[in-house]
Image 1 (tube, rainbow, N blue to C red):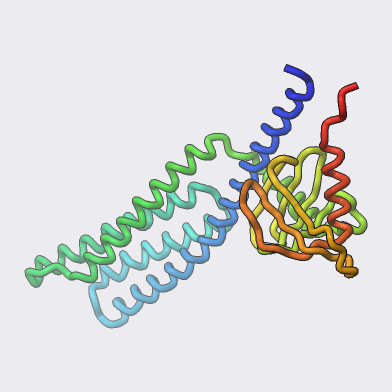
Image 2 (image 1 turned 90 degrees about the vertical axis):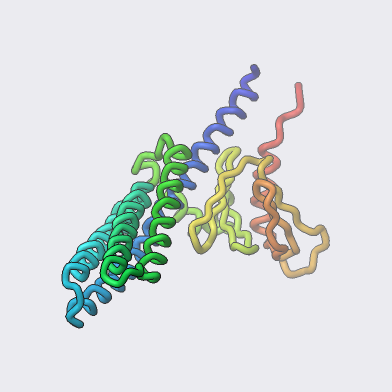
Length: 262
């Protein structure tokens, strides 16, 4: 195998690893955001427990709901401070506990009235389904991220994302500003292009053959022309591309073309 082919393969492997870092980074951010849902749900359940207790209802039930709500709150805080796939596993355990509590309530109502509470059955089955879905998702993530990026790799990637978002194509000849939807900012390192959404958490890592950027030839006299972007086969809406970003891109693309044989 030639040195050129070996270099190309190594760069492709590097891009794959970097895309995995980006994917796990996005997973962590998704888990951290979902921690707020746990906190809101815990607050609702604590309010429900307080209502049962203050209304003179079954205090054991109120205490159980309160204890599980406290567990839900702790899971939410854990997901926010230590976002990882294990947050989904903790979610599943809490939902299983809530499902068991609703099942016990339905059984108690059946013993007392000869008919189980339909509401308790509904919520019990709903939470049981949610628990199994989270367990399945956790198993899928364990297989997908068998080797997880190290924290220092995540931190490096965060710094890179910030650098790309704040780069100006006028002063940084490796930077691109691509105002399509979503609005992408990009930076070109060697044979690799990093695309970072201006808002949100989307990141793409691509080689020169993994994306296309085309711009109309007619000059409108405004310094901008209509352009189309495709990344890994996904087409984005037409947008106006400035001369500076286009010049940065064409110069980089020319540098990636193999030299003619001697």
